[in-house]
Length: 300
Image (cartoon, rainbow, N blue to C red; front, side, top):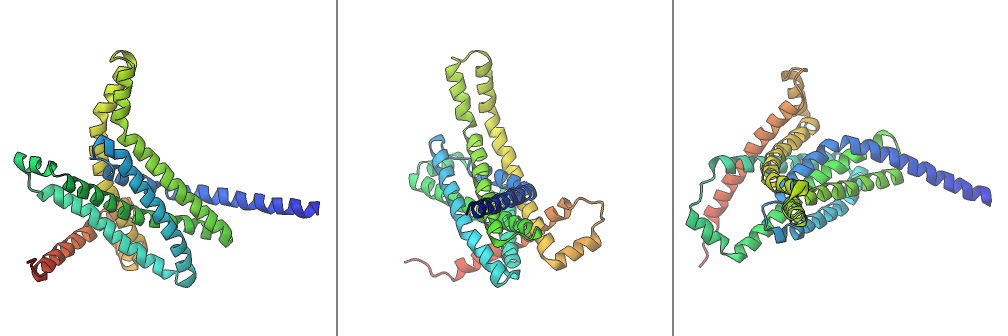
């Protein structure tokens, strides 16, 4: 009886060891995407009133957890039923990420500057502010879904490489998914509250000494960090999407291998692929919207 009990403990220990090793390897492989995820979501979680930053971030975080709950069973089910379907889903997700990235660039380059009275009029409409907040949260959750899908599939690939049993795959991939959400959004929360931390330090130090200076640095650094994250987030969207096209579309992979010198970092053609696919997606979306607007019956 005792020997059977210790055998069970030994099996549990071996299982936990496999899970720990697999999770560690998967986390290393997804580190780049986690960095992209941080940059993208930090950029999307900023730009709100101070009182709305945490509620908005919490709404995005809950959406991210729901995304993981949806993605995990679907990925394992597809792996069992029809494994190539995972690649098709990734490619569609890559197109969406490329569209998101290029739409930001196009908007920055061609967006019409608004006059002062237009800005005042818009800012005085609370229902528009609420709709804008909901729109940003929805966009952040959609982007998180694609990045989460990429993270889960890479983590699953790591578990498959080690030929672990299904239970180890499920626990390892789930662990990586949870750590990704907690880690990314925990760091995002710290970033968006930098200015509040700065004001707190100034207040506690009575605007004197080292902590007052540190508070000033945090307050002045936040706008710079937000702008940098906006740029990094856009670049990350194009890099992640380009990486998906490069690795999961055979024709694109062969073209890159044959036409791009081996000494060129793979991030260069991947960034270019993100731009090209993103431009096509933006063009198609723009034309589609115009056609839809033209055929849509006018409201009476």
